[in-house]
Length: 328
Image 1 (tube, helix red, strand yellow):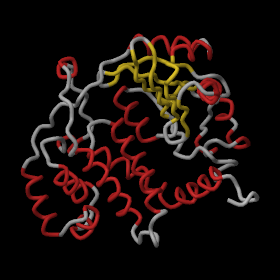
Image 2 (tube, helix red, strand yellow; image 1 turned 90 degrees about the horizontal axis):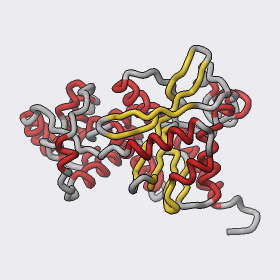
Image 3 (cartoon, helix red, strand yellow; image 1 turned 45 degrees about the horizontal axis):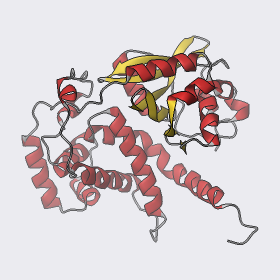
Image 4 (cartoon, one colour; image 1 turned 60 degrees about the horizontal axis):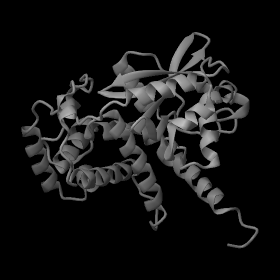
């Protein structure tokens, strides 16, 4: 690369921003599609994030942009999910099997679970939930109209009661310790809870792998980023129209159990009270955190989890690089 060219990360970031201009308006619909396919809002968000990443990488190898971005993005998601669904899966533990089933808030889509083969489930969701034509479904799934008709016939005939979701055992002790340190604004205490090899991730935005200097910056951002949030019109960070009266005071963390798993709700103070704007999810080893995922730029997941828990929430949108009001 010639010395006067921008650094490679800057070039990739600029390309990602252009990619998002086209595909981010489809992000909410993509989440809903992934939610129909997967067992939980967490799995749906993971699949949507993976789909956006795979689509971005794939687009760079294509000779021309897809003529139908919606159908193409759903095809990427379908391929990822079908590949994942066909892999052998470990048997759930006795504790996972005995866990209480989650609340059923997904309506008719709740029946589209493991009793359908992957392609059958995708075909039924595309046709019945998203109103794709038979030709479009065939294009998304990379098959023929005849095969789609057969998959729809088989899939619709199998729709019965859903099976239970697999569970992760809650790590309540580590989550309680995290919330106590968070509410004390104790960055060092939070850092001590993390394994040296721990990953800290703001989902869809940035990640730190291991004990490097960015990890502390990310923890401080979770603790004190509310000042930038409240002043988004001048400091950027999110669309200023989404601030909705947020105040520049540190948020608080509250441990909750969701679908048999301990999580932390991050409450932000607003002029009309507190609302959840982020959720932290944990993977632990013993009493320490091996992976911390901060869901902040994931409005669809936050809305669904908060609805299940019966708490109020506010959206931050998907974009984290806004520099001034309403503009990327």
